[in-house]
Image (tube, rainbow, N blue to C red; front, side):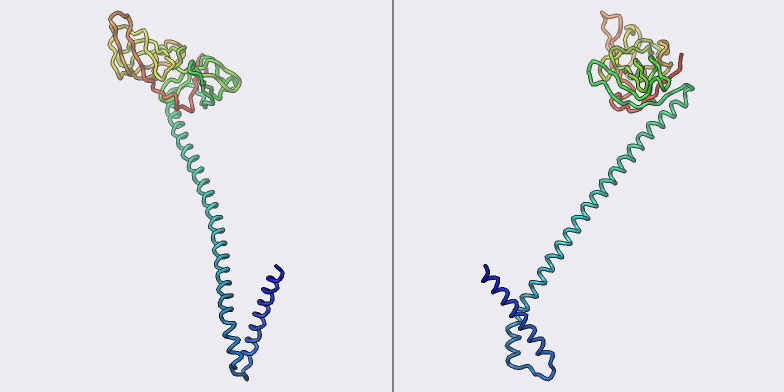
Amino acid sequence: MFSRRLFIFVGVALFIAINFTVITMSTKETLSVSGAEKIFIAITSPVQKVVSNIIHSTSNVWSTYFTSTLALKENVDLKRQLSNAIDIKNRYEELELENARLRKFVNFTGSVPENYVAAQIIARDPSPWFKTVMIDKGVSDGLVKGDPVLVSEGIVGQIIKVSSNSSRVLLITDRNSAVDALIQNSRVRGIVKGSNENNCLFVYTLRKDEVKKGEMIISSGLDQVFPKGLKIGKILEVTKVHSQLFQDITIETSVDFDKIEEVLVLKNRQ
C-alpha cells in the first residue's frame, strides 16, 4: 500500500515538474523550440489531455448531481403546492355545497312564518334496529322534546331526547315513528309509519279509497307535531287484498336520509 501511494505521489510530482518546466521554457521569447522541449510536449500532452478529460467528466458528474438534487427538491415543492391547491379546491367545493343547502333552508323558512333553529347532524345510530340521529342543538338553544325536525325536501323526524347542547331525533323511517298524513290530491287520510328501512308505509287507508302510484303524501297537521302541508314522500307501490280492510301502500320518502347533514328544528309551538 505504501509503495503504491509513493509511486502515485512521485508520478504527480513529476507531472507537475514537467508542466512547470514546459510553461517556463515557453515564456522565454529568446529561446526557440528545442528538441528537448518537443520531447517534453510530446510526453505531457497525452497526460494533460487525460487529466483535462477527467476534470471535465468530474465537472459533468457534479453538475448532473446538483441538477438532479435541485429537480428532486423542486418536484417535492411542486407536489406540496399541488396538494395544498387540491385541499383548497375541495374546501371551496364543500363550502359551495353547504351554501346551496343553506340557501334552500333560507327559501324554505322564508315562506313559513315560524321560528326555526338550524342544526348539524353530529352522529347516527349504528344499530339497524333504530333510526335516530344526534344534532348539535339542545336546551340551551330553546329546543324541547317533541319539536319537529325538517329539511327543505320534507319531514325528517322529531326530537325524542334533549340535553344541554345536543338532541336525539327519531327519524320517520323508524318503526316507532307515526305521522298523521293525507294524499295531497285525493285528501285520503292515513298514518305514515316507519319500517326501519329507507321507505315508509302508509297504513289505515281503506281498500275502497282510490290511491295511485306517484301521488304525494303530506302531513295533515292533526297530530299536533308537524305543521300541515309538509312533504313526506311519494307513493311507490299499492297493493289491495280483498280479504283485508286496508291497503298496503309503500312510500318513497322525499328526504334522502343517508345524505342529510343539516336540519331545521321548529320550536316554540306550544
